[in-house]
Image 1 (cartoon, rainbow, N blue to C red):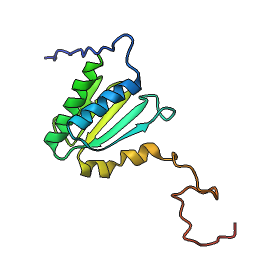
Image 2 (image 1 turned 180 degrees about the vertical axis):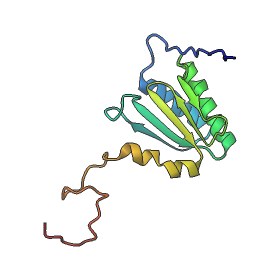
Image 3 (image 1 turned 135 degrees about the vertical axis):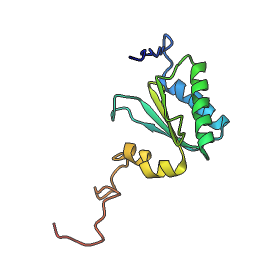
Image 4 (image 1 turned 90 degrees about the horizontal axis):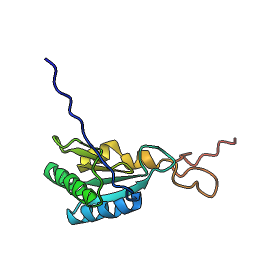
Length: 145
């Protein structure tokens, strides 16, 4: 017996809102539902999957799910239907794909473990005045190279 395939119909308004306009709605949603430690990462030039990633935390699995639901509700105000929402069942990490903007809503321990902010911002910091990366460690030793 074969199961019937379901077709998910997504639509973008014509013309679609700019990523910046979508970020305004996402910010409003996160503020309204009291999300914690929200950051926006500009990933243009690093990946073609999105222009921005938003990473935020909830205080419990119920809060994480509520934040994701609020983001979807606010995105729909601009006419944007999510391309996908993943992780709602466990609600430790919910990903809301809005096309140009991807929102990661995570419990603090999950966020700390995966460290998405660090992953997507590697190389964004300018080197120190001596030309070295700030994260580079030499222990203060002069290697004579």
